[in-house]
Structure formats: C-alpha cells, structure tokens
Length: 127
Length: 360
Image 1: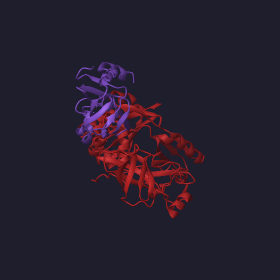
Image 2: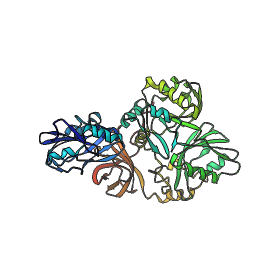
Image 3: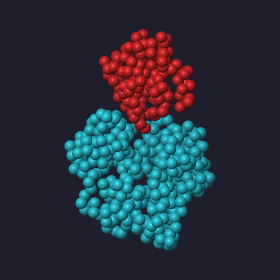
Image 4: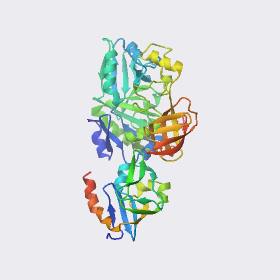
C-alpha cells in the first residue's frame, strides 16, 4: 500500500494521493505547464464511477482541449468546486489546491502501479 | 524548418517554440492570457518574420497589381498601405495581404506564410516583363509591436517620428540608430506597428524595444496570443475564415473589393455573388460559459447549421467565442448550440468583432 501523502502519477499526467480509503486526484504540474492557461474543466459529479486509464472528463486551455484520464478506479465523492469556478487554480497549484476529485477507491492496491514522483520525473524527461 | 533571425533570443528568454507554416517561432511564454492582457492594456512584442515580404518594382507595376488585387490601389499615395485580397477568376481567395506603396514604381506586399509559395508563383505568372518581384523574406525580419503604449515605446527607443506615421501608413526611422521601416498596421485590434529590418540588425532591434518598453509594460508574446487577439478583433486568418473555396462577400470583406472602380481577376464572379447574395455569412458566436468552440465545431440554430472557423477563450470577454459561417437567414442574436467535444453547449450569435479598441 502507498503511504499517505505519497503522490503517484500516471503516464497520461494525472496524479493520485491516498487519503485512507479515498484518493485525491488531479493534473500534474507538467500537464498544467504544457496546457497553459486552463479556462474550463468538465468533471464527473459525485456518485459517478471513474475507471483507471479511462477518460473521465476534459480540460480546456486557451491552446487546446484534452481528455483527463482517471488514475484510479472508484466512485467520485467530491468535486473541487473551487477549480470548477476558478480553473486558473490548476495553473497556480496543480498538485495541491488545484486538485480535481476525491474518489472512493475500489482497488487501493493498484495505486502501486502508478509512478512515484522520482519515476515520473524520469518519465517526463524522456518526453 | 525555417528559423527566424531571433531564434536564439527567443530560446534564451524561455519561449515555448512551435511550428507554424514551416517556421519555428514562439508559441507562448507561459501564459497566453497574460500576453493578451499585456497587448490590450500596454504593449506586446511579436516575431512575425514568417510573414512573406514581396517587393514588386518597375514600370507598369501599378496596373499589374491593380489587376491582381481586389482593393483600389489608386487610393494610395507614397507610404500608403492597404488591406486587400488576391482572388482566382471564380472569386475564391488566394490570399489576403497588405500592400504598401513605397513609390509609384515600387510596392511591398506582406502575405501569409502559409500561402507564400503559391502567392509568389501566382504573382509572377501575372506580372508583365517590365515588372520584377523580389522575395525579401529570408533576408529581413519583421517584428510586431502592438498595444496602446507602442508609440511611447518607439519614442523611448529613439524613433520619436513614429507618432507621425498615420494608421495604415509606412515610414522609415531608426530604432537605437538602426534603420527600419515601420507600418502602422497589425493583427491584434490595437494600435501598433509592424517593423521590418535586415536580419543582421533584428536582434539589436528586438533588444532595444524590450529595453525601451521595460517601463511601459512591454511583454514578449507568441503566436498563440496573436491568434486570440485577432479572433477577438475578428480579423480573418487564411485557411480558417477564407480560402480558395471562399469568396470575399460571404467572408464579410466586401468593403475591400472595388468592382465599381476597376477591372481585376475574379471581378465578375464576385459581382455575381454580390447580386444574388452569399449562400452563407460570417458571424460571431458568444458562448454562455467558458466552453471553447474550436475550428470545425457544428453550430446549430433555428435557421440551420453552420460551422466554427476559429474559436478561443476570450480573455477580454471572459467567455468562449467563435467566428462561424452560418446560413444567411440566421437571426442576428439567434440562440445556438455549439457541439464542443460531442456535447451541445449553449451560446448565441452576435455581430463581429468581439472587441474594438477605444480610440484616443
């Protein structure tokens, strides 16, 4: 099991952080940097099920629209209303206050399949 | 890929570089929105060296260009510039361009990078022996200084005479003792200048302007901000609002076509469209929220369906906006649905442009 507060990353540039049986998820700092100014987010509401590796919503920046893939499988329990009304928070603090969803995990152990911060750092250097 | 003479300066100043029409140029410096705000409120500096610059010279140049272009060149005196179109015999737009009369024997055409090769061959095919065309694009650089502080920045850079160059006029001057040509034109909807100089001097001109602009909010800007600014000002982009399948009437560019004054390639076809009416019209779309309509998105209203030609988030309006071709019968402020990534998003039609600067 991942330690609390340990951030894990997907190859599609989302992050997940375990909080008990929940995971807080968001876009990586690398993702926001590359998207540029985020102006709109389309996110699944509470009660919706998201699946690891599947598109769960989208992010619009001035330059482009992109899918957001869920890094975990589970049920959405909370949406960050602050980023919905002020999407620029994602640019300011993507891996902190710019989180997107809180998800009740179905398969907590699978978080180990995501990359550690060091592994992700190596990964983005190859891109 | 072609690189600008300013390439090293851009990379050193943290530009995110990208490809546009075969050129490697700055796309942005981190925040497109901040760059747009800078141009609207203060000033921005862009490298637009990809724009094609073609000089035509010789006896008969006036008559030859007058026949190739839709606007009326006889309105220009020395130093006058004019937005104009070059069309096929069937009225399809080959390019939109700015023509400057340097003298009665010499005109400079500034054309789109994406059409550069096509323009060169089309123009040279249509010129008489007495007129020659010189492509100066590779030897020269072009910088766009745009925004309400542009005149002040040029004065601070040693070109006080910039204030005497009128709108759509071309003038010579010196920036930090370097000879340049500057036209009071642009692609942002703001006051500003497009500055041309030799490649060897481009770096010094760029640095002199950035230094002179430090106290006037001058910000480096990339092509992404330029696109947002031109959409807000509803300035057409070739390949989006206009192309060879588009005639100037439906694109809302009739005021740049002067069939009553002269003969030109495409005249009959365009006059015919003017008489029977265009089959579509270019209008604005304002989204109810922040969803961004992108090029190609379907726009549905009571009168029928149309399509987005250009769309963006407008920092100035705080909403998603688009330019779209719609049926000619679409009502002026008709409610619409725009299909954004498979979902119908509400909006309404509006007149263009979205933004007009307040004149001093």
